[in-house]
Amino acid sequence: RSGEPCKVTIRVLLLDALQGLEPPADEEAQPVEGLRRLEVSVTAVDHLPKMDSLFGTCDPFVTLAFAGETHQTTVRSKTYNASWDEPRTFEVDKSGVGPLKLQVLDFDIASSNDLVGEVDIDQDLMQRIFRAPLYWTAEAKLEVLDGKGHPVVGKDKQR
Image 1 (cartoon, rainbow, N blue to C red):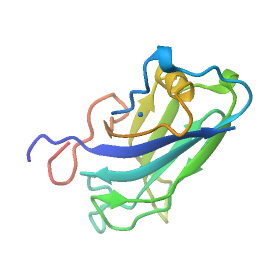
Image 2 (spheres, helix red, strand yellow):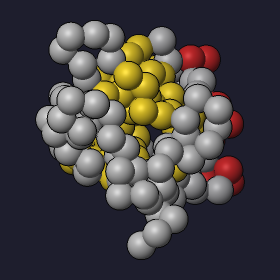
Image 3 (cartoon, helix red, strand yellow):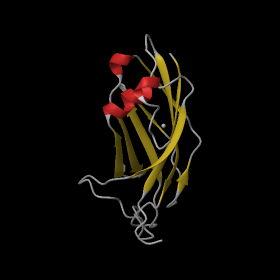
């Protein structure tokens, strides 16, 4: 399917202490006091580009940065379509809710890792997710953008 974007799939679960990533309407939002835990799982990255000149594949992993914490997935070797089942938990109070930033990187053993692309979920959406009812969950596929804001095109010529 030509023109298909490179996408990262994430799942979000709101715990005590997204239909797309769209939380319930504000009238259903709960008043929030104290800490809440936000569980974010990167479940897949599809249509990755060729990153390693020697072997011609990609060794992807994803970093997740939110509320002053950074987590990362494990590295998947030599693939253009990676999958994970690795929930990452962020503890945050209402004053600490900012944007969620995901970086898709290519692991390199002999040099620094290469940036494949990024996904940014803005602060407004993250605040609405934070105020959603407890145990609310959603999953979405989000387009991966390069450093210039263009969609990343995979080895299979799909984006």
